[in-house]
Length: 317
Image (cartoon, rainbow, N blue to C red; front, top):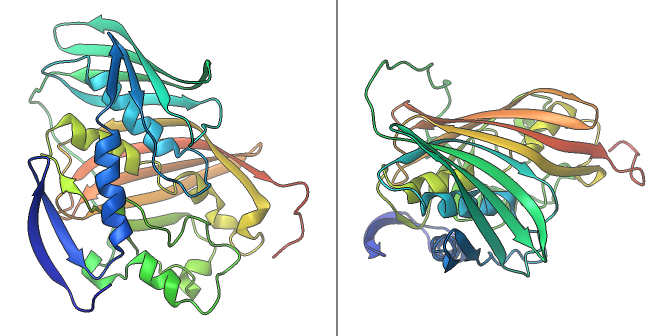
């Protein structure tokens, strides 16, 4: 890691990549790996195989399966971009095994196309997803405003913040501070007094650290799908930050819905505005919006996740 900051331009896979220092080199390596594993291997018509990220002992990340499943669906559609998807996570995936993606071509209409994707490991379905595609059209245009938060330049890199903590807070996610394909800067610095407060929202600036594809490309949509699962299920724990330590929760994504409203500009910062509306029955509901730096609403997300207190760890923090 070096001191100071500089912007460089390099190219990879025909796209432009923004290189920013200081940061961990492993983040750039993970971004490049993500681009590689999104180049799915075609097995036969409508059937693809995807490799996995090196998760260091963690289970298969749902965002990776979302991105690869969407990529598989995109490979069967021409001249149309995805605008919405609805997915269900049915079994925990094994990060040591490849994933097969089977695409069913449900319908191709004059304006919309529909695809269904099934992700399979060891002969069992671990994930299913329906995706809708649309031809490019004009029409009415409105959106609510981006929340008033500090710009990314006034926020610190999450990895640097975690590394500077004298000790790791018990409520901090095991994934916090680990290298990801996206640089992340939390508006509420991790481990800070503001972060410790009970709250219902968690805005985070994110920026893809690999070669940024064109905003209108299906690859940009797939990378956004990956990002849409980063820390979303855990957002439902925020109102309970002062009562339970993080290792007392059993959490997993159950279902996930994503709507893409506008082109996805991955060559700059996006505000990932996460918030929770309710939790009950061992399930938590979280929502999010992606905004461009200029305040344009790019996409919306809703996810329900399992949020269960482990029966073996019930003592308050």
